[in-house]
Length: 232
Image (cartoon, rainbow, N blue to C red):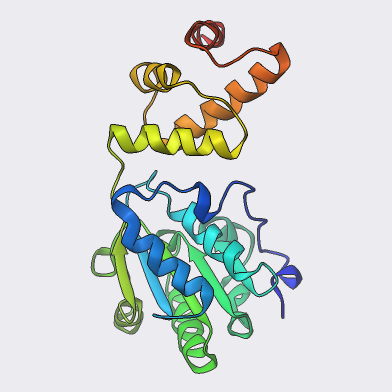
């Protein structure tokens, strides 16, 4: 089985790579995931953290680094809407499996049993696992004790939110990856005037990039201010 044969596997976001993630206080987690993607070190990594800390970005980065033909990223909230827990069957034939958003199926016995089976099969086959949820294993509302213990088998790493300097660095890094010139004063303006969580900032950067290309204008503070006013 390859990732391309899984109809429920979603395509990776183009920007989801280790090179476009500003690690800040999360350097240990990034290094552990790089090693996981390379097939060295710990074979199970569990990430937890608040929304906006980059869990999905990092799991997709792991898949991209490992090679999409041998790895799969499955956001469980979307998967549970489209399929049942039998969708997890056979994933242990891949080299690497990334399961995102365990919160979506925690407490659902059929899904929990499927996860127990998958984790046991992956351990037997040598398949590497990356898991992510908002809460650490001990705080996840899991019903099966067997699943809770298995979730703690490997490295459990918490992602910390970025401070303002980290948000600015992340925004500059994302802009550079897109080939967008983002002057320091524009970064400062955006952090003062706009929602400061990374997801909102990156979505805004996408809109600003499109607008600047259409107008053939640089992302100066006056230009950005005018665009934001026009958006209301």
